[in-house]
Length: 276
Image (tube, helix red, strand yellow):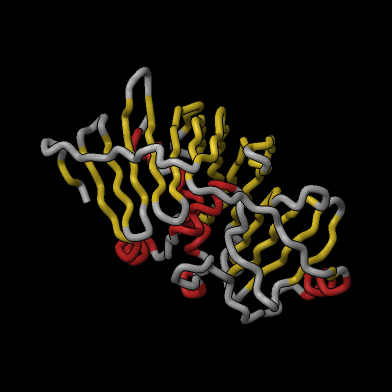
């Protein structure tokens, strides 16, 4: 197993997700919103949304100071396949995301994500990587936003609804429909508990698709938290123009919302080689 790939699992979905609308992300302290300039791409879809539009609903979201999980992560693509990698996650709201990846009885990698930078220490290869969001945006043509990444991990709406966003009813879901010139995003909200259950994003020019399903909701300090999530990415290759699927699944064995700082230990040994 390539431990460098494992360390990056939380960013992978977000990298594609944000790349679809780099120019439309709003930077700052508030949650990103989708640009409000609408383009008619599928008139039947537009007509369906308009005919079933309902009053906006308020999605129930997780409020916390600190969040801690003990989790297992699985990844499958055309080149990688591994199951049940142990990952511990700690989050300080709007400030830090800390990751610890363990192999057979020992830690193989550690990561620290802040609103300014992303640092990963590969203990297996004795290497470390330092990135700023500006560097990643330039290299991979995406804009990775800390708040967006945090929202996807905890199951909150990734983009706040604007006045132009539409709510409509479909079976047992209320769907928040958001779109701009490059992306169409449907947020599936459970009608009974008002929790986000599913995200489906389609990039208009390429038809690349991002689907995130939340599952196994359990009560944590009076709030429903998704103990399972699965991401499916269907992306067209630039080389052969074929679509390839990447699947990521995370299962939380334990989730804790805390008011006291659990600690975010992070250091880079002087003997490690900086690779970026």
